[in-house]
Image 1 (tube, rainbow, N blue to C red):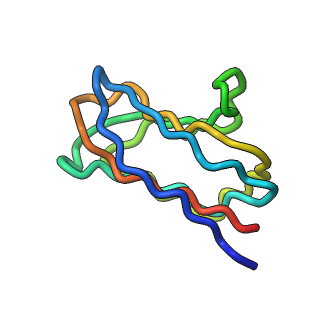
Image 2: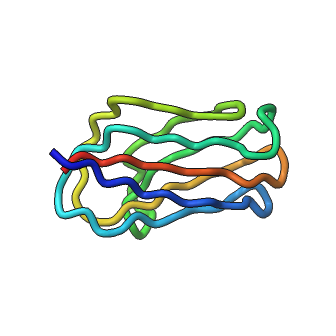
Image 3: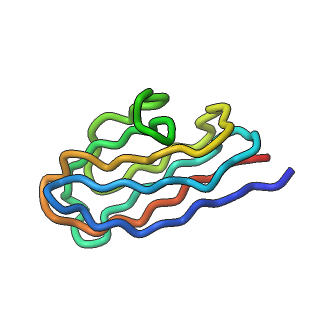
Length: 101
């Protein structure tokens, strides 16, 4: 098995930003890591939607500083949008999504 990693660095403006994964032929999401790089006290919410953001497929809710979900187990095919929402301050985030193909 091979794990594909989608890395990104995002800066929230007005508390929101997103990144679009590359097209995934098929796979299982194994890890979602989002880390606030400036302050571990930054509060934010995260969700994953289909590529045109019409269907939310996973909602991580609110977290402080970091989300590191392992063994997510979400079947994936196509492109997905990872949304960082409602960040308590303007913040730069490191994002990593790992998909096992």
